[in-house]
Length: 79
Image (tube, rainbow, N blue to C red; front, side, top):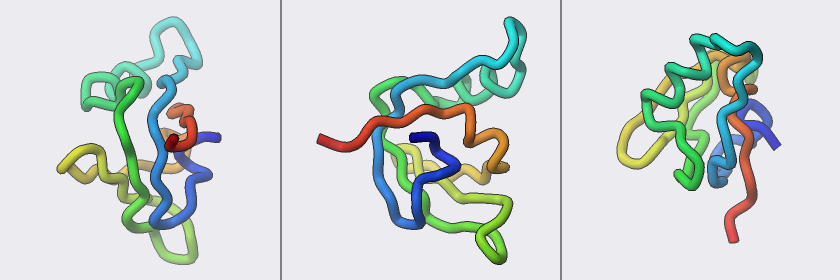
């Protein structure tokens, strides 16, 4: 599953951030912001009619991401 498909209020663990090209600036920026393997994430809000942006809680910080950006974050279920 990917972060853009996680339902409102859903919790998961980041598996990896996928780089679509060798120099994927968006994936690199997500890594810099702390979207790293093993980190728990939660969807806390979504844009109007379920569209952009989505608000994601990563630790104690909230980020607003476009769905295209969130689609680069691969997740695994909580255990």
